[in-house]
Length: 578
Image (cartoon, rainbow, N blue to C red; front, top):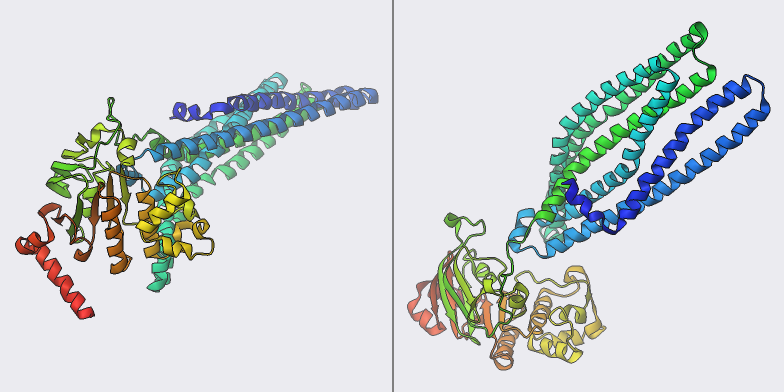
């Protein structure tokens, strides 16, 4: 895992090397200061030699300034390296996510991916900065200060060795107990983000049904769960602080007691040596405190790192073949004994033994009840998912023989959830064709019956669309998405219930425009209203993942009971409305 992550340091290797190098210089200079101070006390103050005191004082000031400069540089290098490391991680994760299939995204969830790219990367980034500074500084400082203590008094140094063993045991206990809790805590962040995302996405529905109190209670439950996990983890981690303080005070007391005895009784130690020993004592104990903080931070970061590596290692379930077909010849479609399951479980198929043959240029309606897998059927055509058994043939080739971008460039799909991005109407339209002229965009909008309302907007095609398309109605959003799809000039156009928010007259005008302007494009129209597809060349009737009818409107009315029941029910509803 560490090797995997360090590969993303990338162009910041220089800063990553300079940061610890500056830290080493800083430590050497800091360790030198107590030696100089001991010399000032023993050879200057006690000897009454003020010239020596001034001389050594100037040297100590110079050493302190150099140490400060080295520390400042190490901070700059470490910040640059860690921020760059975090940037590279986020970029690599985002790039990999763009190649994910729907199946991969379903595995992680949207909220989980957001947490991994924000909270988890921040944790790893902070741990990385601490490692290249504190994790270098603390051990070197501790070893150097301990070496100096041994040089001054080997017997007193045994106190620090005992402190090291004691603290090592306590840290091992804390880390072993805290890691599983931190792991669960980050899953709690996923659940919290999912709750927030769902609420903000559906805020209009929440307000329309006056469900604010319910949503508050649900959010409160998610935050309470996260709080309980955090408190449990922190309860273990905070043990580190009192244990460290206890160790520090105990060491100082023991050094004071035995050091005074060595000076007064044995005469084997000077006052300056005892003073420098106190400084080294603090340096050793501060280093131990830093090391304990590093272990706590890396324990948290370990959970985040594992979650990040999961995303980086995830490979798309859809891959391009070695020898791929580079052009879709026409819009013909054939389903050959297709079975499909979202979980790849043959016992949980949502499509069963689907057989279809659609000629290029045909207009095909798709009708079926909720949960009959209408959307699933059409999502197999641009290979958003792969079939479990059988094959989907487009333009005479299995969809798995095409390069994915080749296939999808030939298929325009307007999904049930129409999405517009922040930017102008023109920028949104050019998702269909980034080189499209204003005239081509206007023509596409005319076909989609969107041109008229766009022209009435304050800035026309330069009108800014708010995030999520909140400043246009549902019907307007649908028509803009259809226009965007038409700009791709596709061989196959799929409308997944994408005229549900427009009135029947506009729906009819859109279908009429399709028939006249894009006769060679194969059109698949999923609809709830039979009136939206009854003029189609043929209509597919789906029921529980199986095709139970595939014929013209007239023939289905005569021969298909399910279709006839839907038609009569809708006709009765229309008569009642009148």
